[in-house]
Length: 267
Image (cartoon, rainbow, N blue to C red):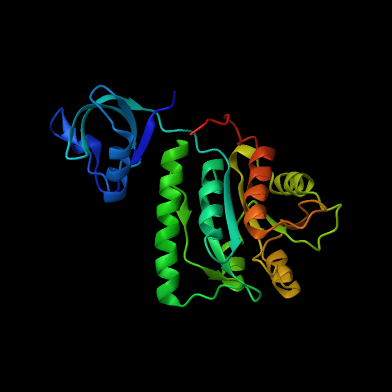
């Protein structure tokens, strides 16, 4: 059975002087610990603020906060390929669901994309609030699914800003409902890896998914022009909802890169 995982924002375990010490969890993580009803003798996986990995044994619970001792220091997981999801802003809680499920798959980061056809329009204040919420969703999903790291969630970007940020990617895969059926994701990814002379394990791949209204043709052109290894790809004959495409597309990329493993577990 995998260990419950916690991430520490401002605590470096190697700096703790006492054998038994409290984990300085965020309020949300402390609530999660209480829900788990952790007890003495249970073991936790902990990633501290220095990005070091530990297995800790719970000695006691103090007001919902675990006091622990280090059972052993763990090796940091290998980096492996990285997938960035560039997701068109979606209305309601659709973005929450995309962030949650894509984090569970192993997506390394999210770049929300403000498009001409986006139903959602965020001012600076609303954008900051949404990003804070998406980061909390990503953190919770990473803890729940046992991911080694919490994905980065960036502030919403325009298509021009996203294009500039993707210039150095190993591959940029632009998912578009008007792409020809022959524009297969696997072929585009293999071609980009070959062009970059990059093994799959070191790849940094960006996957672009449009909003509810889809990407406009000029936005597609800008994204394809941003990187010599950018390609238009089709996700099949069905027209997928943005929140479905935002999970399916990175899952396919992770599978092709050999980074989609594990098995489903009832929770």
